[in-house]
Image (cartoon, rainbow, N blue to C red; front, side):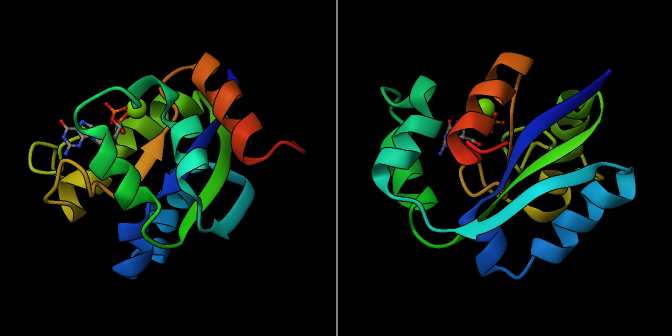
Length: 135
Ligand code: GDP
Ligand code: MG
């Protein structure tokens, strides 16, 4: 089933010059870029995006990190795009993510793990509205 999913290339991806590398992996897989924007978000936007995590202990430093510089937000489309993107991204902790995944190959951190991908169709719908309300 064709799906759309919200992907963020977090500020570490931009700072480390890995935008091309990461976008290439999604494109090479066959996903289509439906929308893409370079932007810097404030704390309110971070809290909206990460609403489910705002009360967690790990959230304050995560908020500082995601607002620390520009990121790239995009909407990707393709067959089973939500699950496919999560598989390409790899496990949350870059130290534990499997080699071959974006995090497994390129991140050594639980927080600065390069990418975000929506975790369900409900999340994708909610997040796409937050980032790209005109879609
Ligand atoms: P994801 O869906 O794989 O991105 O993971 P989650 O939705 O569980 O967490 C959101 C983001 O919060 C992760 O991508 C990490 O950047 C960060 N994060 C999650 N869990 C932890 C943690 O235990 N420690 C730290 N430092 N960061 C975390
Ligand atoms: Mg998540």
